[in-house]
Amino acid sequence: MKILMLSSTFPYPPTRGGTQVRTFNLLKYLSQRHDVILGTVRSPDVTDAQIDALREQVTKLAVFETPGTVSTGLAGKISRFSRFVLSGTPPNVLSSYSRAMQNWADELVATGQCDAVTCEHSVNEIYVRPEWRQKLLTVVNIHSSVWGTCREMLATGTSQKPLRDRLNLPLLARYETRYCSKFSRIVTTTSTDQHQLLELLSQPRLGGKADFFVPPIDVIPNGVDLAQFPYRAIDPGGHTLIFAGAMNNLPNIDAARFLSLQILPLLQQRYPDITLTLVGASPVPEVLALGKLPGIQVVGRVQRVAEYLHQAAVCVVPMRIGFGIKNKTLEAMAAGTPVVASDRGLEGLVIGGGLEPIRALRANKVQEYVEAITSLFENQELRQELSQGARKRIETEYTWDIIGRQYDRLLQF
Image (tube, rainbow, N blue to C red):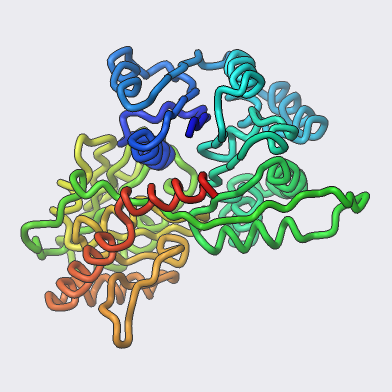
């Protein structure tokens, strides 16, 4: 089978972020069984050596240059919003669009050089023509619903710009509804996102178009590279916390601040020696400022996140916004670091309880986090139960071989 994969995010190395991790591991699995043609965009920090390494993983690689810079300032914002209203496509999708990559993909499809097209992240939907669905399989791999995320930020009061998001919400609903109808199949990472999209796509539409197509929506979660996240050798004990994630990502920024400013101070009253390590690439000034507070260390990008996870007694994933399964949660579970996380941080995961082993502790309110973390600090047996139960679940359900097999079956449906 010849599979054209489109990714405006350069998926190498697979430690750069959640999108890169998922895209790389799926293409790696598929390349062992099919001819994979990858089209991607080169950001300024991508090296020639990384391009060469990625080329080894696929049958054919086409790399395109990053589109021009986006204008800033008030005039630029007004211009981008106006284009959103008129075109129906969000500014972040338009800004990453490569005309050269479009022409290349058009040629491959027109000449019958592929049997299926996959968009690895919804931002790549812009390259797929609606008429392609009539001649070959087209799949969009949605990492999280943009409409659902915007709606959640407004509902939870975590939006940084509520006026902007209130204006964007109906536009995002229209956009997501439109692009979903272009595809043969949709992939989400959790049933929560699946249900959100079904809710959106089932809403009455202006004009009542009878030919509106609602594709099947499948759930295929993320996986973990167990070689990159080996199980810990020892329980370090002590009063050490970690939160890991790309620190220029809005949901992660919100989580880091929530943990540092609201949860940690209460824990410091109980445990004066407690420490929190914030690990993740590209920390923005709001995150860097947290490193000036007592007990907090901001370390930025690291070579091996697992080494930092192994040094922590507890991994906290206090996400308040952002849908989809969280790599950071899966990776901590694989490493054997006990997890305390929110509904968003545990989305798509069954954490056990009752007759089943407990695999993580759930918390959403500040006091719930304090009590859950305290219980782990004070109870070594509980830490061990979470550690072992979580690792076993990852090994049996969330390796990239298991996830890749699910994706492969969908593409051959």
